Length: 108
Ligand code: SF4
Ligand code: SF4
Image (cartoon, rainbow, N blue to C red; front, side, top):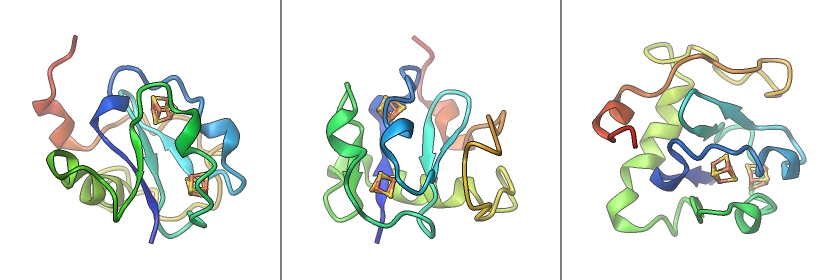
């Protein structure tokens, strides 16, 4: 189980959640943050600080954003960022890429 960052983060991406994460598992794409599910310890500390209510436990993601569970997981795979589970976002910096499904979400 893990927490997931859904659509409201896109193009807001203010990184407020990053400072709250005790295991540094919230990684930066370009338009959105992505939670590494294998590193997330399910503490919930990130959820209340998000100004746009983008963060949900994966069992509580609203139905219209359910695909963000897969988006956050696939972001780390070889077909997107290839980051895997690097053990800390601070040392990675921006991945410089987003999951391709974000292209369907219009830039404001
Ligand atoms: S706090 Fe919310 S909007 Fe800001 S980066 Fe995290 S998920 Fe995105
Ligand atoms: S639930 Fe806890 S461990 Fe998981 S991303 Fe949020 S702050 Fe980090």
